[in-house]
Image 1: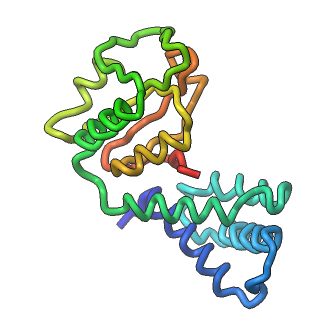
Image 2: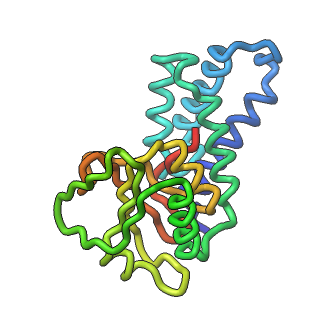
Length: 209
């Protein structure tokens, strides 16, 4: 059975945290720098020994580089804790993503967001909203990718909002969003985020912290 990206990144996070907790070299008074050094070595070894699928090799390479250059400021422990919590929470959620998106949009409205799903987006646009948080989904994509409460294909959301809040709102609704991409956005002052069927993103999701 082929392992998914979600399964691989969750296994890495849990294994790394378990190794950190079990290490005799890392005591209760260990500093963040010591913990980061341990996790950096754990990841470097995992990468060298190919313990995990190639799916997450780019992430491992980046985190090892950051750990070596930034030390405690790389935040490797916090990163793995966030991955473990977030991916663990959605590990059994793969259906009803259309309904979950509707829940997300409803919560966004309750939080004061402007939400638009009736605009055809076929080029660069500008939304004059005086800085109010907003979510925009192209009408064509909204209609074609949602059916009977399910998400049929990747769907792009253009969002202007605090990313921590957005990630938490999505997680509360059982959704994983891709990291924001400002360059790919068709709406000024917004970033593009993507939802994927069955919550199976091909890369690391937007984390709540």
